[in-house]
Length: 533
Image 1 (tube, rainbow, N blue to C red):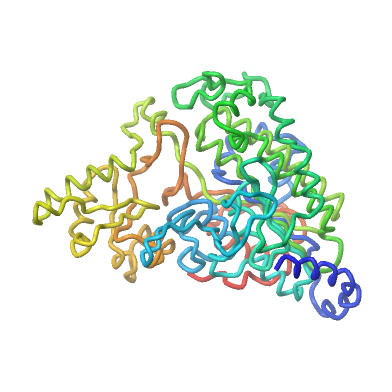
Image 2: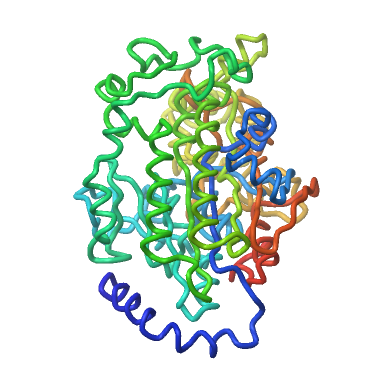
């Protein structure tokens, strides 16, 4: 497939000028380039919390002042994770239909735990790591980028770039010219699904080892420390001590890498900086937006998610990450203005999910909440269920696993699913527990409908649950996500450029509406599988 991609690029260059008039005569004017920006784990409230500290020439400021904001955008399914988030944004439909129900799931037919972008039939390119055997194979729907490809008779180009493979692969779509992500050595890599070898410009970039150069500079605050009043104190008990026994700035990144490994740099603004570099390289080297065939570029900034998981949504680390991302987005927009031209591209920004508060931080303020360990909860459930059910004493374990807000029962327990659901619902930290039949029934309450939109029978457990607000299955530090509560579902949706006038709407919008709204503004066809609910 890789050699075919190279032939296709040469073919496009040779005949593009001939076909422009025949393909586009009679079509409405359209943007030369569509840029999808996804910020991993960006809560919508960050736009409020950090608003007065976004720079005048920063990307968030430009989007907020010159673009259009849908301030009430929410996810309409559970669980809210990275894989299904990128897939739902890009396809305009929910996991129930596109099939990416989580980052990982248990296939009930084979008992195999599948990774969302896993493809054992392809080979890693640019790395020896088997973890880069990746493709959009498991994505069962076409994407907005695929629709643009089809609309241009595949003469438009489509690329994706991210720290995470799933953040590059799902936005770029099935017909992508390329998708690139970072391996463990912080080099951009791909798989044989796309091409047989890395483009020369990516190999040259990798050889510079920019991550190592940035590591030596450390991580310093963007502003004076006294200005970080919108985050909790720098040194606190809710964050890990990765900075030479401390959690305070400035960070000695060389020491942190020695302690946690090179991949730890993905948790810092370095990850975003590398993605920005690659987005700009692809823009220039692939000549995106330089003809009348609309191109697509998906850019996913994953480092905010790593930082949120590590230090928490109220941390100074996350606060500083967004101030630096503001500058990085501003740089990207200026490059687009120069390369493609103001008004010739449409850029939209959203997030794959929000993020929870750290329960220990909330408890420190007097709120009665805690974090839970998965294994401990399973043990407590099994003790309680066997005591409550009238079953033989040798039936010791009812619950086999808890994955993705789903409870998998052992074979003997499945006939008791309804009774077990009622038992579990009375225990902490559960607030609602449904059987599969209950979430599929017509007229189910809103929560059950959200769970249903994230559900596929062959990839799902016997029971589906919602946790109590602010309770998480996680360690003592940092944050996570996955629920149907506002802190996980409410994300930004900003856009600017071609066909977009400045403004703001508080009308409720679902994440599955995003690409259709962009298509409408840009005079482009809707995503082929969008608006299925």
